[in-house]
Length: 634
Image (cartoon, rainbow, N blue to C red; front, side, top):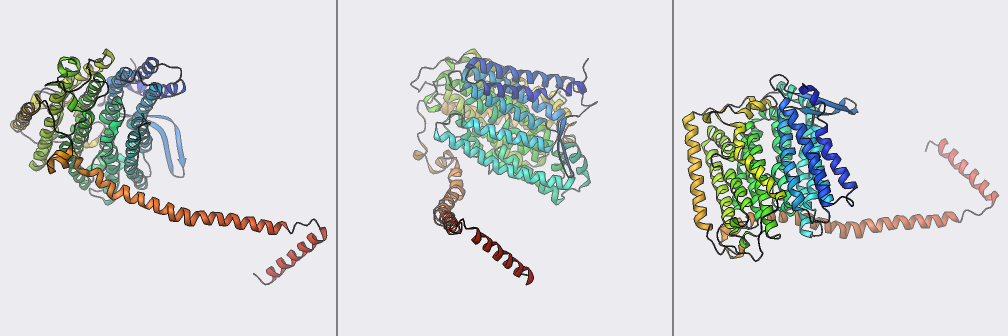
């Protein structure tokens, strides 16, 4: 039988397969057809999933928790020695299974969804390249390898959001995502510099092993964790760096599902959990994370209430759910946060792909005001979308019930106020998701296009994700249901902060909390059914709404605020510098230097007479001048 140590040395195959797919699809993009490029990309990601699954099943965390696989020596500069190495442990294996498993289903879905696109081979090359970068991010044995993957997913996100680049609005959305991610990345770069200054290395095992030598609340550790969190805010769309994610819906729907629901946006969560030892030494940073996560969950949920684009509703839902994950991390409940990362990957990928199936069924229509009554036509899409809605709303026994209950229970143990805020956000989530479900699939059809069910290549991934959304709660079944929280115990071998998690609540209290949230969610769903299930007309544009409702529908005008504070001043400064600095200073200066040089050349050229006597005289004169300067010490 092959041991885990032996299999771990084949872990390089996990990122190598999608990298090979990206290279082949890019090189042969004019020769491979839609089915050929899609099949190649999907099979190679499936191969990565198989290797990841074999590593997972052979992993015995209690015997061999971590295996570091060094591929080659990479950087040797002065005292810095950084190998190109992978760290295979419980945390990286969990993320590898999510990235390759959900990614494989989305690749398969893309074969049907992107079939008619003329650049489909390029699309699959970018999708494979993103998968490669994400795997580097989660498998890296040091912060620098992780940062390479971090930057790689940012680049691929830019390429995929702007995939339909002929649309200027899509190009703007891609640039917006790129710039806002770069803002966060500055924080990561500064954090890495500070960590290297503190520890003399960037290896995870060394940094986290030596962190105990610093006291709780050490200013340098607090500074490093705050900088890491700035990077996490950019990647995982937290206040104030969250406005790029809803605009990223400009990309094809599979991009929204893979990058902006299941994988890339969870990179910030991964980074915090991987560095949990440092964050445990920085209570102030954890309080900041809790505050920002809670505020993001509520703000994004409120915006989702009045959105009419099917993908925009899900986009703000993603931002809100990421807020819940960060709230869990701020509470020190790292396993609860990672559990919600996992279940969210299932049901949010399902919802995005379900939305894509609806869009495909309606020939590209995304406005829910032009939908309705689709449950009788798109039966598979409806049933799977319903399962995803029940899961994200947190209704028993779907996966979201268990993962969200874990976060709410930790919040109640920490502060009833935080619990009440997060519970209110959960009710907002239930309301806008059931609003979406009822407006799209119930009532009377309000569109002018003939709907139809999507082909099997689209519906099969929906069915698989629906099963995972239904049974995913078993991954970390709590004690009150007879489980033993297997995911928590598994992750405790990879993130020391998880081992310190202790939820001190009586079983009766947990049952009361679960019952309260379930009853309130069901009442919210019933209210949404009464308001939207039989609607024949919907609210018009925000301009026709009351002030507060209009303000929320216009996303609290945060984009306009950013434009006023940053975009317009920057544009004015750029225009001013170009008008005065470039045209009136730099251009005349450069032209003046050129003109002086040209005129000097014309003067000097006259000295080139061809007379040897004149040249001899000039040489002697020069020697005399040189001697005089030397004599007088000039």
